[in-house]
Length: 115
Length: 115
DNA sequence: ATGACGTACAACCATACGGTTGTATTTCAT
DNA sequence: ATGAAATACAACCGTATGGTTGTACGTCAT
Image 1: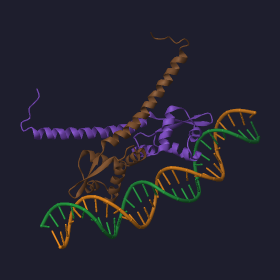
Image 2: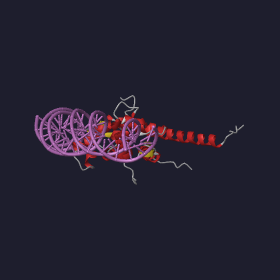
Image 3: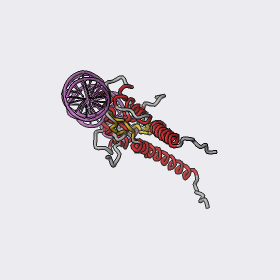
Image 4: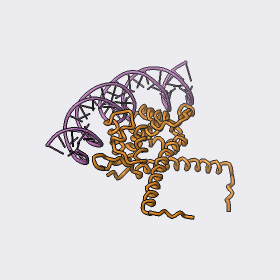
């Protein structure tokens, strides 16, 4: 149970097309590892490893159902990753704001206060 | 000039704490590679490589100013990465919607049509 | 109880990654 | 014109990653 986000693991896990597709499929339906594997041109073990990487990153969990383990996504983790990118955008917009403020200051020798 | 997003490269580039910090600093101020390097406990060449990886991913560009190259972020690319995570969330919410629809259907034997 | 199905894991291989040092190359200052 | 500063790049090393095959463990059906 990870308490603080593992950005390295999260982004690392998303840095592979197969794994991103596994995330999509896990969102869409309830597939076991073998069913997942059937979609990709690689061995079962390879797909199993991909799922394990997603699991380590906290993006996915496995739930035992009968004799198979169904891959489920963890929305929380996806939101955490997105949040970081949101923060970057915030920073960016903040910088722009500061820049325009600076421009306003320098271009107006006596700053008129808007009511 | 990348026309379609390189998700592998983008997420891969973000899967490292040093590189994420470089992105932050690039957003905040206009630092050259050497200035960037001064913040981290590693060689200049190592930081240079990190910047190159961010550059390959399209997350950052370098602009020559005098004898140094200033690292600048590319907001566009950050938004593209975030957009993908947004899509995942969309899918997720869509699935929930479908599930609740199904529950509604099954729990109401004779579906009442609202006006 | 046997066998088939689904999963897990270890060992191995090739390649990529994060770091190092060393050697150019460009640009500014004197 | 010389030298220092800032950058670029190649070669190298250890480790992680993405793939393979093979073996072993649970679980269901018969």
